[in-house]
Amino acid sequence: MKQMELTTRDRARLGRSTLVLAFTFAFSGSSSSQTLDAALARAYVSNPILNAERASVRAVDEDVPQAMSGYRPKITASADIGASITGERVPSLAGGPGTRSTDRMAPRGVGLQVDQMLFDGGRTRSAVGAAESQVLGARARLDNTEQNVLLDAVTSYMNVLRDTAILELNRNNVEVLSQQVDQTKSRYSAGEVTRTDIAQSEARKSAASSQEILAEANLKSSVAKYRQNIGAEPSRLAPGRTIENMLPKNLTSAVSAALVQHPAVLAAMHGVDAAELNVKVSQSDLAPSVNIRGIVQNRNDTQYFGDRQLSASLVGSLTIPIYEGGAVYARTRQAKETAGQRRIEVDAQRDTIRAAVISSWGGYEAAKAQIAAAQSQVRAAETALAGVREEAKVGQRTTLDVLNAQQELVIARSSLVTAQRDRVVSSYAVLSSIGKLSAKTLALKAEIYDARKHYQQVRDKPWGLQIPGGQ
Image (tube, rainbow, N blue to C red; front, side, top):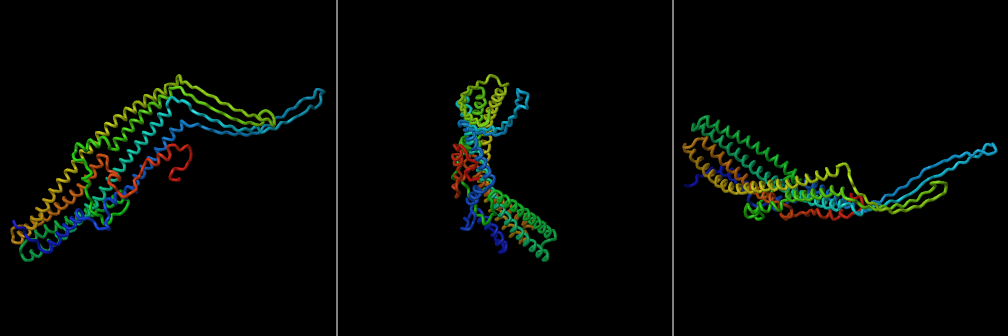
């Protein structure tokens, strides 16, 4: 059937809605537009949540040199000084007043003590291993935080695009309905319709105005979220694009990849390693330990004024714990239970990741199907509106029929906008669910943060209060 023609003003208004939709989601932006990749790069560099997690990883790095201090000697210096006055009266054998004497001394000394562990039952070795596992776990959690931040940034970006397009659709709808009210009033003056038609048109216009206000509020909320997640106000956003080429070919491959490489799973596995090594740390308190201690001391005025004593000693000691009240046994049992808990958490994390992959994959497939359905719905709604308008001119359709057709077209176009937004966001969600959403994978134009750099700077650092950043 041949499509009915719209009036010139109707075609202009509806054309504007179509143009906004197409520009927002199909055409490439101008050189001054802000792209999705640029927004993600900005979020990657400046997002406070991500930067706080990086600082947390750097703090965990310091656990390794703390554990390694068990291999190094402990050196302490001491110094003391005091005053001593001793008075003495010796009676005279001849019955005279006798003699008095007073000795004044300044007893003082300096010393140096060096303690070196030779064997501690493997405590230091296990503590270092546990600390290194904690570092690896912290890095995995950082990768997971990076994924969440980037996904939030994508969602915020696409929400602004979606809400901008929906607001424009609602504004155009108000304009079209305003024209409809004017046309209905003109037809009422000509005796073609009743006051009921005018009331219906005005009611629908008021409802459209309410939807416009709601759409504007939603856009403001999305803009605020954009500012929070990306760190800048949105300006001339270019269309977002899916990353389908980075996704696995099917759901089975996606699940398999996620269970092996997702940062949350890796963090849980490193937690198991650290917990098992902490069991050995606790058990080491039951093992013998061997230490050596060297002491050098210099003292003056210890017995009489002007004397000096210099001493040095080197002593090796063997300590064998026999019974310490049961505390070590309790700590060891506790550490074993904690290790069991960490192993269960790995299984729980894998179940969570599997569910997330299936959910995100389903959302992605649904979004693709919804786009095709929404496009057909828009074409049908446009044809229906054009036909109903022409039929209304010859009295075959009522004003309510025209209003309903107009409303269906707005709903169809809003559904298409939402489906296109969902397709982009869901493609990033799938990549996040399998553990590969990162600045490196997306090839963002930003300096990639390397957590290993700080670790290498502090791992073998024996002294110094300044952090590598200079503070």
